[in-house]
Amino acid sequence: MQSVNDADFDSVIASDTPCLIDFWAPWCGPCKAIGPVVEALADEYKGRATIYKMNVDDNPATPGKFGIRAIPTLILFKSGEKVDQITGAVGKAQLIDLIEKAL
Amino acid sequence: MHHTLIIVGGGPAGLTAGLYAARARMDHLLIEKGAEGGQVLLTDWIDNYPGFPEGISGFELAERMTAQAKRFELNSMFGNVVSMDLSAPLKRLELDNGDSLSCNALIICTGARPRALGVPGEKEFVGKGVSYCATCDAPFYRNLHVAVVGGGNTAIQEAGHLTKFADKVTVIHRRDELRATKIVQEKAFANKKIDFIWNSTVTGIEGKDGVEQLRLLDTSGKESTLNVEGIFVLIGVLPNNEMLPLTDLKADEGGFIPTDCETRTAIPGVMAAGDIRSKEVRQVVNAAGEGATAVLAAENYLTNLS
Image (cartoon, rainbow over all chains, first blue to last red; front, side, top):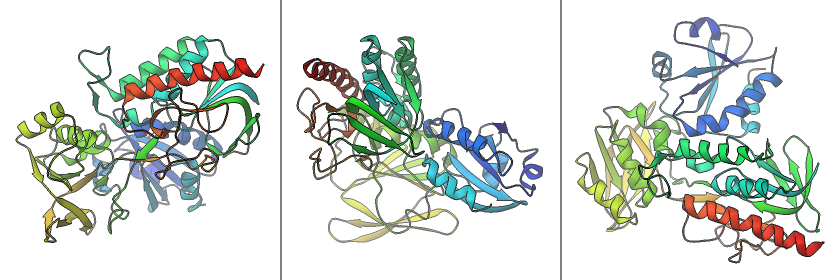
């Protein structure tokens, strides 16, 4: 799965292909818990939606801009616009529902 | 796919069961829906698991338990069990991807998850000031004022963790004394950044883009408000039981699964270990012990079958 940072964030989300950003940190247990689910979805949606990870420790600007106060938070974007977001170690079905909102 | 023994859940109970099953060379499978570790991953620091005199982070303990089980060739998979048919000796499990699995003996280690307050504003502000995991979210509250709701070990210990980041931590508890272990209480009372609001409950969470204030009600019926930027809800757990046949397992009122002292449930060949068990004490060390007991109970059951 690809990573995105503060510098290339705007160009990444500008894509017509929906993209889901997984905001995480290495010290966050639930982020680790949701990791395998997100990885699996990145494969399943290949070509239709792109999934990126953003480490909030290394990239404070973007989480600040979106008012993120909890991780894991996953935000779905299409053509530069935020479609929806979800917080917490939710199940695969809930993540699929989220991605489908932009397809 | 069929296995002699299936373990559902990869927290401390499931991982210990996996370790014992692997070492017993049983034909086994452990199914975990996220990452191994379970709720341990939500815990900042564990000082009461024996063998770690300096304490250990929840994260590292989970990794070590996983590595130990894998050293003995733990057979594990990533999957989400959505239903179980335990009415026949051959037990059947359905996964969310449509796969089905069967086993002769089953150990349920599905654990528990944090309980929500259930007050107006709570759902709306999840991730915007409402949190159930201080370990995950504390760094977002640098130099801010946050509230912790609860009076048990988790609440009081995590209040201490929050003071590493927040300016001020206000513990709101519905009684006039804490339930947390004495040493945890002593630390909290000595921490200048922590103050307490006793005999009070949170009745609402308000704000615009994020949490700004809490509505409180005390036991005398007096209402008040408290301005905070965050609220950490640490008021106990709910069982992860959605995939279980609760009637057949004779679940208790709270939805937890009763067992005998060998972890055997009401259904022959089905054991329950860890936080999903109906019990008073939910500690990592119990969960691990119960996981070991459950494998030995499974072995006994399987021996008597053949």
